[in-house]
Length: 364
Ligand SMILES: Nc1ncnc2c1ncn2[C@@H]1O[C@H](COP(=O)(O)OP(=O)(O)O)[C@@H](O)[C@H]1O
Ligand SMILES: [Mg+2]
Image (cartoon, rainbow, N blue to C red):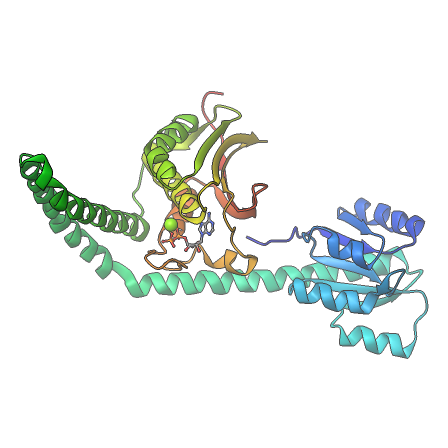
């Protein structure tokens, strides 16, 4: 779930031949390198690196100030400062910015690679530690809610179903009344039905999440799952004034459970519909990448702020007034049951992009 690629570096130096030289050494060592020629260009570079090598003297600004600014924007970033000549002053400034290390040019490739390796390792350790903490917090929350709540949910479902049945009966009787007196009854009845459906969905999600249903994997045609889900949610999208788009780039099969995958996709599309203002777009894309199937749900809504991204998979985390905060944890658990992965990205449509990768199998 790390936002930065662990092996990507940003190199900020206006001396292009030197930068190209360093790039070659670094790429040989297995790193991906992005080069920025100055302060402004560095800030404009996509922030998907975990270590930055910054020359302290840039044509359009001070490298130590850039280091501080980058670190503020990417708290996990480590910066290695490069300088043509070492002075006490610049060393002190470097330490103040919280730079990981300070190298004097020309530095030996060995020194450079060692320093980068150490910085990368540190970035990864910090990330791992955070991820472990997050998992522990999640397990704790679940244990606290525990079996009792799962049992209770079962008990809630029966009366809910009974109530829903009675409402259906009531509605049928009302519809026999003269048309002009139906409206005042039907409308509130519909609302109650809707609320009961919502409750019932929450209970279903919670149960599936608290006690994942076991299944025997069969070949699932994901394109068919996409079609089903879009057909189910089409009316809801229209009501919200949204265009629901599909793009089936390849017909992909995976080993799994169609019902669960459908449930996961419904949750993702519902979130997208709920987040996107009228006039917007929700798109589901099915494609492939190497041996994986890629299922993407994206929207033109406000997106998910980077700071919230790690939290959206936590049970009960919601920013909605009437959200359950169970949708994404459920999706996460279903994706894990299918040996897949889920990540939050930015959509080219301006909003959120939820990307599932699932191992491909079956007929092609
Ligand atoms: N497509 C999206 N666009 C913006 N925010 C989203 C999107 N999907 C999920 N979120 C955020 O993630 C939170 C958790 O989602 P979820 O687990 O489905 O719970 P809920 O929908 O009940 O809030 C939401 O409250 C919202 O803040
Ligand atoms: Mg949701």
